[in-house]
Image (cartoon, rainbow, N blue to C red):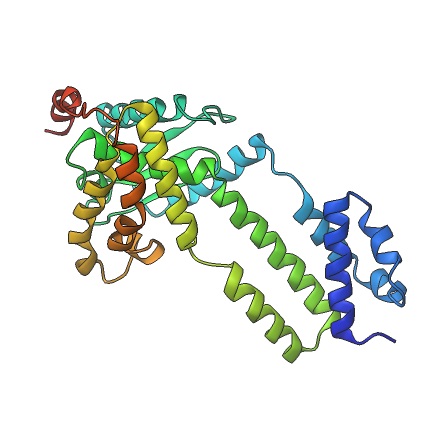
Length: 289
């Protein structure tokens, strides 16, 4: 009879093969000697792995994102400034219409959160972008506002939230396997290793850096000055010490690290880029002052 850990590895291998080869999971498991009784008693494992393999449609993404946005709004009040909200949404549309992924199930939408003391922003896979008034007040130009929005669009278009959902499905699969195959001590060891590397309260640092890189490309395509990303991060550095590692600074790399990471990309992007910020100064001033 196979040892429990060997069974665990066998199921993982079979599940992976099933996911990538397109063969039925049940057939893959049936080929493993000695698993008949275990497969019969762990149908929850099959269901969990099947969910892991499911594609998330654009419609699914929208309804998932709407639920996430609704949950966020239980912690904040909406800042009811129609003119400012429309302005931010116009910036958003200018960015996405020039991107490689301009269309979502229900489009991209910016919502302002009434929180002047908090510097933060959120995005959902459904195209919802939620920005605090505190973060908006950090932006000294329209291009800096575009940098904030472009970063969140980057998360959406790179499907970072969806990857988190898939990671959650992977966790459910691991939990199902653990409960079926492991003792409490063994389960704790395996779960700790997997969860510590895959589950996090926010996006990973790599994803944040990728969103910054995507934002630079979005800004250039829409005619916004890419150096505004650095200006915005420089401004945010002044809030870092007073944040006590909460909010934005808890879930993002430090502004200094982000600046260091994108300096080269910004320099390359600006090599043949004309500075057109003066054309946007008047409309920025009209809205913000």
